[in-house]
Image 1 (cartoon, rainbow, N blue to C red):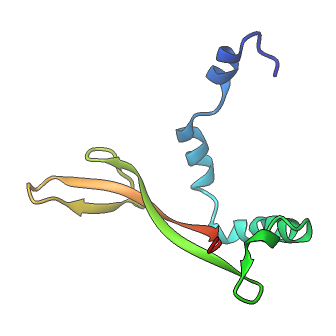
Image 2: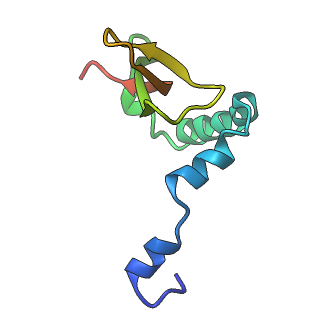
Image 3: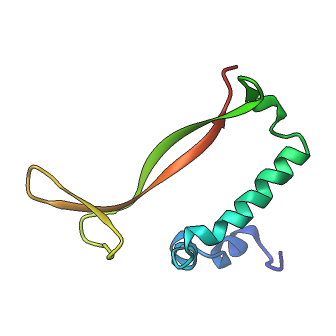
Length: 103
């Protein structure tokens, strides 16, 4: 941290939009090796051991979320929803896997 104040440090940090513009250009398959590396490290260091159940398996719950919703700003990758009043909402959505345990 080279800034004199924490507030200035936060001002210089990339915004969510800047990060999204970088990440959106990366194909999901390019992240698979990173996710595999993270998973193997978590397994190796036994961080996932408390989550093993049903014969040593990991349970993964899936949830979805919608983000970047707008009635004016949209891109060619947006999903859209037409409301009863005729307005259109544009949005992006994602599926979020979460490791869960019965206990």
